[in-house]
Length: 164
Image (cartoon, rainbow, N blue to C red; front, side, top):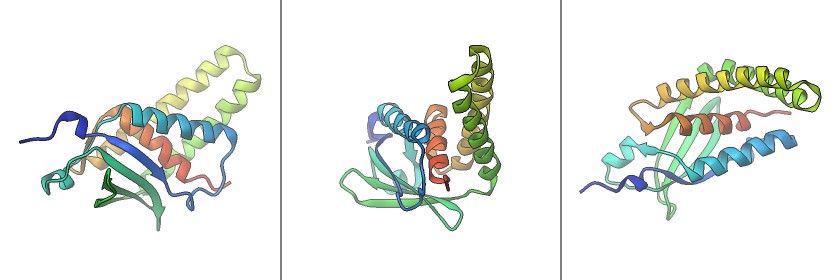
């Protein structure tokens, strides 16, 4: 008997607060929105955990350890089922580009014309979409997920990289 589709989702997400050294109000807002949107609508099926008989919904904790993303997956009662570790080398450039374009976007919101804001926002979405595709590629064979979930997870990975 297979678990119902609503089992394949993240119901709680936490970021390692020791990893996050500094946040400005704009980044804090991005973090809140990404977590809210992620919890409201996501697809997340960790394949090895499911093969071992575990079923969601899941608790997911994200942290960066030794330059790698650690995705600790647990059941809702806190039973650890697995930790996925992804190298972040291929994400360094997208993260750097995303920070740069977000900084431009936040500055533009305060003083640019609507057309300039829209242009920057389109570039921001493009970088974000490319990074989400990269994350989907890196999760292939490990986690079944969707594009929207990957986008939100990438936002949270970026939050973990803020150094101030």
